[in-house]
Length: 318
Image 1: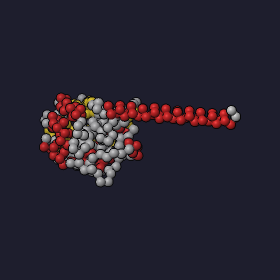
Image 2: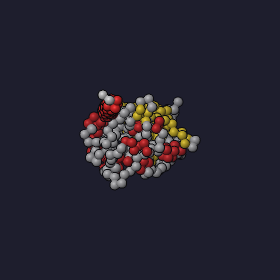
Image 3: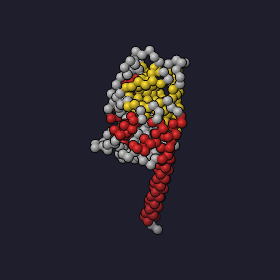
Image 4: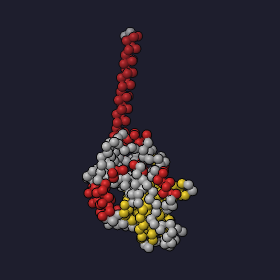
């Protein structure tokens, strides 16, 4: 064999080696991706309850339990999710707070209300999220790294009036840009809520009449779907003693040991899930951001961020 022929043979062998290596790498990446999607699909149904305890009630007050629900994103046929939602009534909450994004399908309202039926028999308050007004659309997951998602032209409208009516007929209080006082255990709870800041629909409605001057035991709670900083600032500076929010899905796809990569709003990613203190203009308020219960039906997976409901046990200050 001539030197030229030998060199050509070596080049061909090297090329075949590179091709084989590239094919092997592609297969490994494909297998890893498939395994990741399979795991994420499994984790999205590993529902759990996070528990928090807060000493914010006036002295000598009886304990008070809030069940915080957010981002259910219900789709017809989600039997396991429906059964788990029904089971939450066993925690015997004194109040249910729903911070929006209940739907992920236009036909989900009736099965969602059925799944929530035991909880609808308890006192509740609610605000809306964007996926109560509009259905989700398929999008690239990479788009979230460019900033908060935006409303697409000609959105798919959901029957928000029907959902709101279902909650309202059960006695749950609509807090969208509204305030309301409720009395439990001879203590006044003053609520103020905001419509979804993600859609720029929020307005601070102030506190119920007489809130600032009341001499009776009382606590102030702010409720909002998306925890944009402007909303948290407004509620904190107004004197909220607790703020409840959702929207972030806890990042949904997280890195173990690191946490969320995105929050889908301007909230720092390390605050995308959990109970944290929020400071604004000299005031400080605990904020609970729920990682949520569901996902968009077009992105049905979670990684290192299991779905959750949150039990907040409020107790008297020491």
